[in-house]
Length: 349
Image (cartoon, rainbow, N blue to C red; front, top):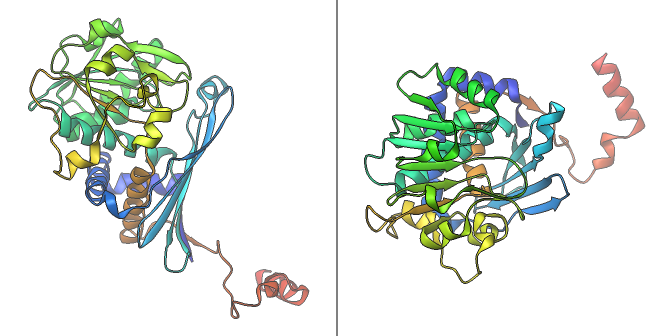
């Protein structure tokens, strides 16, 4: 049988574990998988683009498990009362191909994206970086803020969004975490002024320059997480040229990340090498570092196996017959044989 984790089940799991603990466990699982990066078979996600959005399939595997995520990105959905990002995914055993988990990934993706940001920040920001600026307060806002606070030691976050209601929503939700100081800024420049860490997480699918060179100060670490498809950027190209850039999976980031604005020959560095201790992150306290994050399937693999482990340990989720249970593996037609169908119908009644 396949374990099924829907949104209600995921909420129960998070409630039982605790939001901050769930986030920390997600990050720990992701670090483990980044450290064994070379054991995975990787490829850039398969994307189907339209003028208003994108639908993507994100597969990855190692010698034991295969995982995929289906995910969309439609910024216009917010005006229709529908989530901008929706996702689900699965885990399967490589030796048989049998799917062991089918899970929601909309809420889980928010946790995994925030965990990836925090891991990169921890690896690349200056030590004792306590102040962050964040531009964009949409669906990802609270997760990003909490991850920076809980996992990267940020004590104060200054936020800005062109939508005042989004800022107020973030402030209202984060009131549950009084150890984090949250300040509403009147402009992007005010939000990032004097910050050690800057995160851009806007949703518009367009060539944008949310962060411009005059807003960047020596020693900043920047997380650019909103640019995640061709024709969608947040960071001015001159910032990219001056920073030391780190990416998840270069072939994918060249197409989808902010570095799509640069020549293919412009140097970038693999984040996993820093996490695994193979390469140095920032070189000094004055250097500007930048994590050009587009989201990668390895992070979803980590999220799925973390959710599966918790669901199993907590006995959460429903066991479903996603795959036929066959007495004779060569007799698939038995599942729809008129006599068998009639018998199953009587049993159900």
